[in-house]
Length: 213
Image (tube, rainbow, N blue to C red; front, side, top):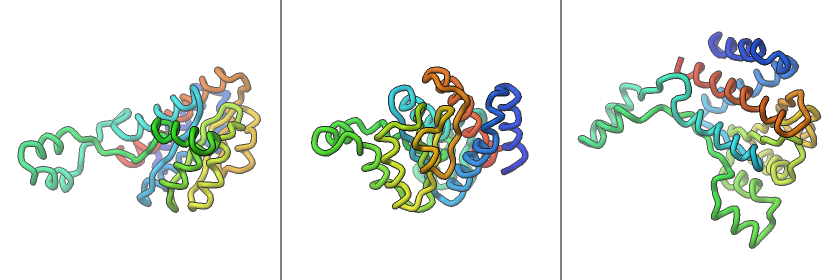
């Protein structure tokens, strides 16, 4: 990672000293996300309840400008400008993304799968459908034991994906099956979630600084 990106994690652990125990794993996740995007991959994120909202939040920080402007390159702008006035608007206002998908968003698919098949496989089915080698799956679970999240991991492995988890202190089942596990040092759900937010903000910011300065 670039120096600007690693500095983000150093600053995170200054602001949240309790996260110092997770520093190496946070660095690994940031590196995995950067590598995924450099190689044309995408991030898939899943979770339940507040963690589903966190999945959406993560995608929101990656798919548009977070702390930096992300204008299109001159070559990209030139391609859009071939399409007249509409193209000129797109060239000026579109922002460069880092590709990410929240698996919680597919309400019709999820409810159909719950009704017609198996509710515990709502994320596994999507990972198997969308995942490809080089992609990254991020599982967000305060306990580390959410069944539908845990079952997404084998689907990701079969598809050749890297798998990371964001959990509470024990790591739960996810700790033993994921390539990277950030187990923040809290056990109560709301306290775990309070530490998840600065972690994923830092990871998203690392990626943004790596690609957009």
